[in-house]
Image (cartoon, rainbow, N blue to C red):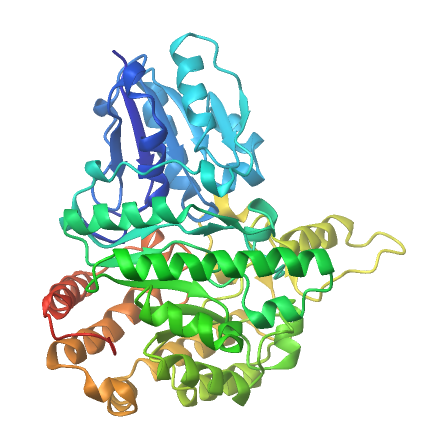
Length: 510
């Protein structure tokens, strides 16, 4: 019987990872075992794909984003050299389905693979494989069950669980609403709860809700929805979310904690925010601050976000509810100058956020910004054409080249060296030992036990080393070689963190 091998590519292999690559286990759950047996899963952050793992007739599925596509194409070449059939899927192939085919793939799956993957396997085994398969946007009730029986819990800090797909916003730098749609698709509460309880039985105590927007329908979001039908739809979504929260709180063990990604608008809905903490046990959240200026938020098409000191107040309110905030602040938006970045740095230090990241602005494929910058590049010099941006896209297929984020665009106000220097100062200032200790002495972190405080200090050191310049959402850990010191910091942090959450009395404000 041919083997099914699913590969999550990475530039580096560390032997452990912060988050389980959810798609790997979802596609494993969608694989028809009666035809192909249990799939072999290769997460290259844990172990490197080796060509001798496959043979002629085997089927290799590779999932990629733009950040790890070159690693995916390396696996493609190695697998094809052994005679395997190779199928690509993921965000990047959904945006550029012809690219993997051009690179030598046998087939491409666009959209979600939950339902269509079984057909791909059947066609490949029967010799009728097509070049293109459209998985579409699978409804929440149709999302496949993950095969968590195939995971090694000792290799990951967080298990990933999805509760909702899609995002109602349309931020210009984000591709989620382009690829996954703006209509939230809710996964069934019963499946979410069963999955978390399964992970708990396997030994996981920390869950990362892998949702692009955990609060797609708060009162504030509903209020600014212009369409009456849209408001009614979001009201239904809110009701379903609160119902999920109640059931989850009743049926999932109290010592299972979680983190997620959400918008600052969650503070508009006290019931929703409280239920996140009390019932879903959310203890940390990445929040897209993007910019502390009105001009920056306009450049990101996120004018509804709070500005300046109002954002700092929002962060404090969320953390007063016992949810640690990781503020994500983009460095190098079109409106940015060296002075605005210095102001951003000051606001970040004063905001009270316990964690922050300062990713370089990058026009990722699939985003509104990318297509507008591409049009500007292609029509530059055309009589009568008015460019939409002052920023210039230097390379079109930059994801295929060994470029840094600083080489992708030409910024009108930020020369490359100054941009890099000001960004480094943001990371250095925020994660200095003095500032990290100061944050520990302020507010509710003072109540943490010693293990929690040590975890936080080590996390600050490791986070700066692992994610500086890129941020946690930019595949940075999959693209960057980690020094021996950084690896040890991460290992120490993981060990202390595990001890922290094993203590019955410990909680971030349980």
